[in-house]
Length: 239
Image (cartoon, rainbow, N blue to C red; front, side):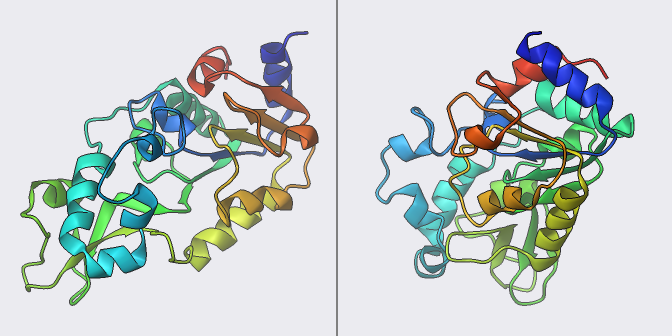
């Protein structure tokens, strides 16, 4: 039995599946990965991306933060790929109970997924730091150098910057979904970003599957490891 057949068999046998995904899920939609060879970490800016996307940099260098953020983080033309669409199909069929994502692009929802826990927030939610009025990503993209509210307050994306903690409710829901799952599929993540990567330790179910182009630290614990692009893998799965 080849690996795709094994994956299909596991999915067929499972009625409570959770998907945990990272940047590799969205690279096939044209959104750059931070850590891949041609990702943002290997491009040259006045500051490294990890510095620009930190809470302290946001406070001290707001204009430079937004110059980078609008240029590199707001990929609003991106469309869901085969992985996003297959996960939405699995949820609609009653098999997939939750998508837990480290991505901030909203592509899972755009593909039709309903239960999505966004560990690192979303570019599609932005709020005024003064009056808490909400704004969409289009407004942020088209705004002047520093996006401001109608009240004059500064706007902040609802994304988790470096030095910031994850949302408690999102964490609790993610842990609960993982604990209750009989199958967990981890895809498109190198499992190096904490605390998100530590969530997989809560899985106690039957099948642990890893789909990633490179090896990860969890490969030795998995029941099935597939080192291929996740969209290609999911395109071969029948719901």
